[in-house]
Image (spheres, rainbow, N blue to C red):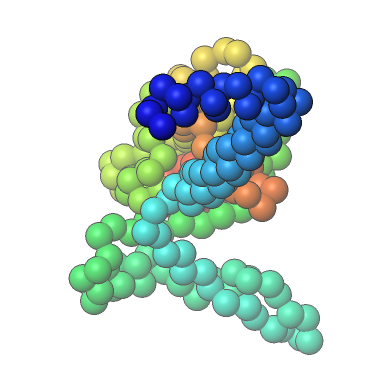
Length: 215
């Protein structure tokens, strides 16, 4: 039996059993679609996890002071200020695997602009922070080494803080008050998104490390 005869017999069989043929084709379509959908979901989940890891900064290690107990009261992580910028310098010097470091201090404070205010995280840091966290500015400029040396009263705002204080207005050049101290806005961080643990990375204000230490 040649190929033409086999094809004719196959078509005839399908024609005689239309319902069975339709159900078979439907089963094949559903099976293929299910496999494709499963692969797409898995790929999407992997990309989402990778995006969250990239948002936290690639190849980064955070060193945080430990706890302290005084008078029977125990403090949480970071309650003892045992680390100094010199410790970060020593780590860089003694560990060749460290490419860059950015010592920092954190606190919560009310940021005020005009008649609007917002409670957010204030981070004192250095110029290398943007490189380490892979977090460039979307407009303006980042904190410079000169700002850190001179304890300049400048700040870089996260996207969420800009939305709360300025709405759709451009904040570059404006003056905000942090703990009643005026700071000039020099930059706006690019949108970073959530941490995956319910936090908002964009709800932050960066200022020079030395300015944070003196405030």
